[in-house]
Length: 459
Image (cartoon, rainbow, N blue to C red):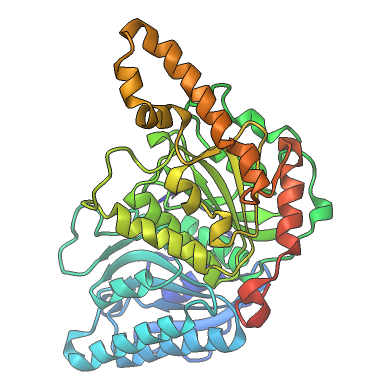
C-alpha cells in the first residue's frame, strides 16, 4: 500500500452520502443518474473524470449500513455491463455491511451475480474499487475481484463480523493497492487511476528527451559499488515522464510495481529493489509481480522491467513458503503476456531470476543492458564456490582470497557474461544510460499492440 495525502477536491465528500461521493469522483456537472435514488442501497451513474468517460456505482451507507439486496446488486451489474458495452472504466465506491439478512439467499444470489459480472468485465475494461467504509461479507469479495483497490481512512475489508488484525483486512497490503489519508484523497487517487487506465495515450518516441526525465543520466541513481544496496524507486520515477503511482508498496518491497506514463503512454514498471533483500526474488515478490504483470497484460498496458537481482532468496531451496509454486506464476505471467514488454538489466541478472524478470526466452519484446551489467547463471563468486570447492579447501587460508578472486575472473571470462549474452541474442543490445529512455520507447512503439489491437481497453 501507499499512504496518499489528503485530497484537494473542490467539493469535500459527505462522509456517507452516495450521490455526493459520486459527484466528488466525476468532473463537476457531468454526473448523470439513470435511476432515481430509492431503497435499493445502490446509486449508479456515468460522467467524466478529467474528461475521460467512466461509469461508477456507490453503495448507500445511509440506508441499512449499505447492505445489499437483489435490487442493489442488479444496479451494480447494470453499471458494470454498461461500462463493458461502452468500453470505459468502472469505479465502485464501497461502504457496505454485506448482504441484506432479511432477503436471505436471494441477496446472496444477487451478490453472486455481481461477482459474475466482474469476472465477465475482467480484462475488458479497468475496474477500480474504492473502499470508503467497512466492506463486510459478500461486499468484501467485490473489491478483491477488481484490478485496483484503494482504501480511504475508514476503509476496511473483512469477511466476518469482527474486524481482524493482520493481512486479511484492508490494512493488509495484499488486498489494498493504495491507502489514502481520507476520502477526498481516495477519490483523487481513483480519478488518477481512471485516467491512466481509461485514456492510455500513444507512444511518442520523438518526444523523449535524453537521460532522465529531469535531464540527468539515469545511471547516477546507481551506487558506485557493484553489490552496494540502493533504492530503485528514484530510478523508476526518473525513467517516467512524471512521477508514477506505486502499487502494493508495503507488500514484498523487494519488488516495485508502478503505473505511470512513459513517452506519452500509460505503462507498468516492474523493478527489483536492491535496498530490500538485495533485490532477491522470494515467494511474495514473485506473486506480487505476477499479479501486476497479468493485470497490465489484460488491460493492454505495456511493461518496462528493470532487472537488478542476484537470484532467488538464498536458503529458499524448499517450497515451504511457496517460492517454487509462486515463482512459476511469475514465469507464466510473463510468458503468456502479449503486450509489448522491454527489460533493462541495470547491474545484475543471475540464475533463475534472470529468466523470471522477462527474459528473451519468455518472449520479451527486447532486452537491453547497461555496459557495466552482468548476466550469468551464478555470480562469479558463487560459481567458484561450487566449481572449485575442493581446490579452495586444499589451499592455505591466507591464500584463499587471492585464489578465489583469480578464479572468479577466470569464470567470468570463460562463460562470456554480457558479451556472450549479446552474441547468442538473449540480450539485444548494450546501450548507454543516456540513451535508455529513447531506446525503450522505440522498442515499445515498434512492437505489435497486443490485446489493444483486438478489443482490449481503448488506447
